Length: 539
Image (cartoon, rainbow, N blue to C red; front, side):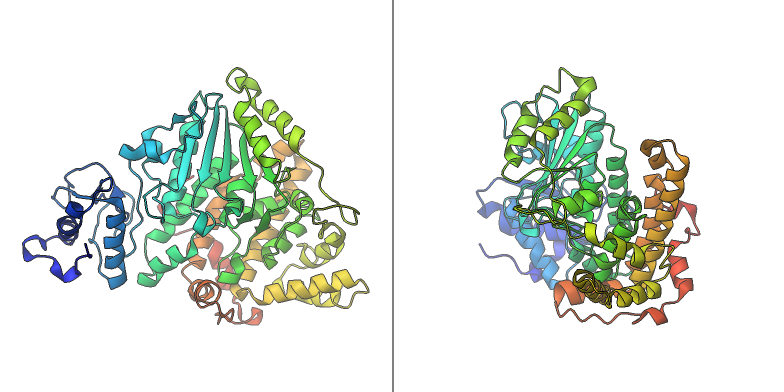
């Protein structure tokens, strides 16, 4: 049956745009489909959810019954036409505007189908943990966040959005955290394993285009603070997770994907891993607490600052470990065996020793990484270790406190007698030229401030664990929340996404267009606390 024209909404039901759309869709679609029906209602949020039939308190109409695929087709038509589905206000989540591109969420009633039961011993996660899991973009309505708990006490979380390289959206963020929160308090869960559904990617980061759509519609959209709140509270949960957290960083692991993995206790890379923080190229800044990781990197934090400023891609397992992004290297061919051993480990009978059990299994499967100059190795050799002196000269806070200093130092390195250093300097200058000048200034200030704090903490704390406590992730994320809300609503963000992801002309028109035009007062303002304390990130 062809989809109904939007003009077919009858006057009898048009008093509420939500009820009209649903009634029209139900009338034209539900009777013709033999596929499993899902019930669609409109809760008090920007996202439409698949949920059991209910009378919505604001709309006052019983939810229509629609087949999942047809729901998506109908609402896609509405989105394409520019028609708003509703004008929902006064909700508890703060999303007080209508929907153009609805985010579908998996419901409690289909929690069983939301779990990948690869083993007969796996149990379905509690329904409340599935309430906010976003439905997949593929037809069929399967969730993009899957969770299960094995009989041995290992919980497995899988990001399953392969066509988008497991890029995360708001619904996925919330579902991910809901699972972690549930498992943190579940005595039956002893450790957590996180993975991507495809060898191509662990996660490529945040779904940028989704956020841009909302910002284009309304620069004050509540969607932006919701996304950053979801991401940053999730990062805090990972850093402070009370149980062993194991991330299998196979494939592309960038942006928010690094936040989901590199903050964990056990961070496993393969020869296929590709890591980067490229946010400056789209007018944002390297966020999700990466600056905290960078602050403790070699050369007094200069290595991490270099990664943040240039968006350098790390493909060498040795470099990943060197930079603090990874704790172990396991060949991709061995990864299935490691996972099988984790699934077979007797966590349940040794609850107090879960970390030791994880460490012994990782030690069994991990292999040494390849240092610079190693011969006969099949892995990419380290590119960064030999460059550390040059990296320190160009990116350490004491030697290059401003972006202009960094650029000048890199130009000086182009005159080096070392051809490797010369090429590195050229590549770094080219990468920074692609970044938004304002973003680069904000990034350098942020990374240098945290590296200075990390150095002070290391000088006073008796050990590494105590030093970490002096650099609390909550403080970092509160700062980045202020920065994120301010940079994401600047013209640079929309322009960067246009140039890199939409038109792909790689010719953004930044504002300001050069470092000389960057106003230091604007940079400082990006870090300032909000006037209203209630607007701060609640962590």
